[in-house]
Image (cartoon, rainbow, N blue to C red; front, side, top):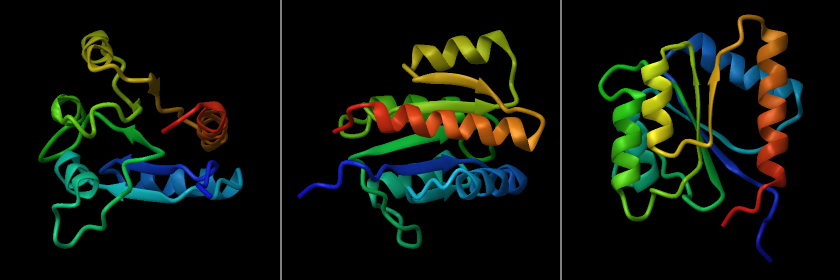
Length: 144
């Protein structure tokens, strides 16, 4: 029987404080979905493709990506371009969670078919509520 509740979450984020806040929000909201963390787009692609010798592979079925835009090595927009050009990974849902309020970043992200573009809340309470809403949304969606 296939597990229809577990969703693998890939957080692509280089800021340790933001990573910690996502982990805290998962715990506070009793979200038990596996959370995988990549520090940049290169590492995230390695984890999704399974071609990294050190990084673990993430199942591409029932997987959602939370993506920051401003990262070293490969930023979020470059990651989206690479992800959407990959015939296996291009359909993965991506939600951008960033500090960038630039209209051009928002426009480019939506050109790569993101499921949403969210500005990181300032307070932990608001951040935690945002993660809880995202989790509810994912649990209601029909995912392959």
